Amino acid sequence: MTFNSMPELIGNTPLIKLQQVSELTGCTILGKAEFLNPGGSVKDRTALGIIRAAERDGSLRPGGTIVEGTAGNTGIGLTLIANALGYKSVVVMPHSQSREKIELLDLYGADLRLVHATGYSDPNHYIHTARRLAESLSETEPNGAIWARQFDNTANADIHETTTGQEIWTQTDGKVDGFICAVGTGGTLAGVSRALKAHNKDIRIGLADPQGSALYNYYTHGELSGEGRSLAEGIGISLMTDNLRLADVDNAYQISDAEALPYVFDLLRHEGLCLGGSSAVNIAGAVNLAREMGPGHTIVTILCDYGDRYKSKLYNPVYLENMGLPAPDWMRN
Picture (tube, rainbow, N blue to C red):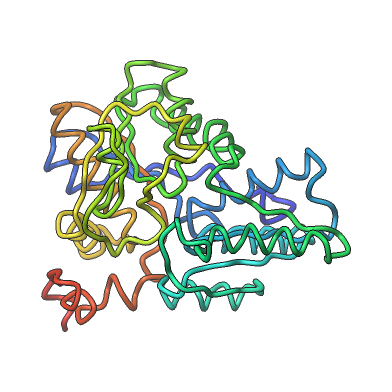
């Protein structure tokens, strides 16, 4: 098979049976291998959906500039696609994100603007900074500029509904019983839930929420509040986005780092997959959903990105100890 350009490689990722957690729960737990997208993450789909929608509505003109505030992966996807399609990219990202993602964005040629990590209510939050920057550049760039607005741009959920969700249905021959993932913008959860529920309203949709995020409390108690923290990057929010409002959620689980991380450490050691912290939260969520539904069910989750872009944190025993988290013995050798 021959492809004409890099964006055509995005999507159609395989499902992988996660052997240990499947045996643990008596369910078939499948991971959608989104780390196999050309930019290395599920966010390639989001980036492509936003760019194509902006091309269709005319807001993104040839040679235009795409501005986004991101924890990293959406910025990576946007930059690579922009390179392939003749656009420019400007990425606003907190200093707190992994060194590896900062280095990748620099390598890929993004105009990277690093800002202090602050709460969403702070006007200097990376999302608000990106909005202001896009407004400014739209006045000065000869071919204009757009703000990708991944949190509230429902082109995000749309592409997951038409691609990710439909792929899961087809790949499981319609025998999927549950789907669960964490939320960064809400696009994946919303799009996949809409696609799967349209096929079978009884498919159980779950939210895996890291500590420090407010969504678990929102879906269980109706309050946007959260305590604690997580080292997982790109997931866990304290606001309802326009994408998330489209999601159809049946179950929510709060997942601590101490619960989640052993799953990806074991996955690397015993199944040869090196994945990031959001995948750890997703797998822990799938185990929770499997235990609630009982043996014999098929549950799908998202394997978001490679672990090598978190080597300095997630796979660093000194960093883990400083966070009060255990590191496996093999990591110290």
